[in-house]
Length: 393
Image: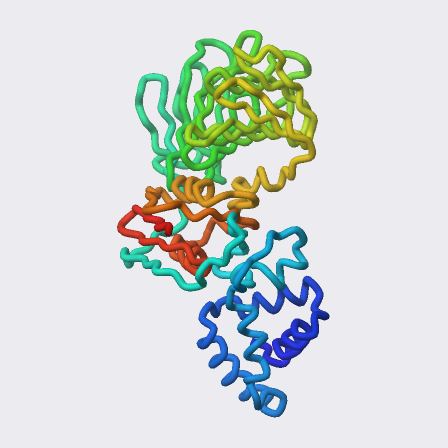
């Protein structure tokens, strides 16, 4: 650690002159120390060794450190990020193992900085390192993707299933007999990539599946999904529109890039358009909506449809790009994402903490890092095997 630089950053913080970049740098440097006394001792020893004259009296910096690592009596609502640095609960962003997330208490009350959380399984739970995806063939056989050698061919009707060098699977061949395959990507599996027979590319998130014909014939191209998938659809120049179905919901396109989040345990289905044009509707929606790039359609179980303008598509695509996006996510929403990625079960004991998260988290971190992050913000957890119990008040 550059202690001279740390001294400068503390002085900027204390005088309220620190820029947002300097504040961020300060929290990165000290963010791994969550206990006030441990930080003070570490700070005193390290600073006196590095710049003894300037830091002979560590007591000068005790109030500064206390403001950084200790929650205030009341935490005001956050309206501007530059004010959060001074007032947010726990008053620190934890940069730990790829995590860059903070949270707002929903009831605006301070949350204890120390929680009784533990990981009882010494093996921990690692982020998925491989894909456990498999293809269910038309005859019912199940083929694990990691069991197929690169370039190996499996005949399906008039098409052939190929595994490419980058791990992607693809279909070659057109026309003739139409048979259906299903690509399933279970919980605890990396994102998997599929090229359909028409050249369209699909990415599947964990706990997701897609059922598709091995060759497209007739007047349209129809696939069905569960979970979450991102599509880059090959344009057929007005011929054979592409259709994605989830129950009664359907997305109709010619050639475009879009994401569909349709997990069964979420409150609605979200269709987000990145490029091109899509029509979103269902059998019971009288007026389907045509989306423009940057818009998102939310389809609810009661068949209501709502269109949101100017969504941040980078947040929608975080899962494909290797991140969790927790912006405006409450604890249950966050936990459902962790369940799918780490292949764990989450249970709750007592009242669920009412908090709202902000920020993103690298998907490659181990579950123990996530638990340490939750602990720093006063959330009690206990991991036994693959069951994570979250305790409320």
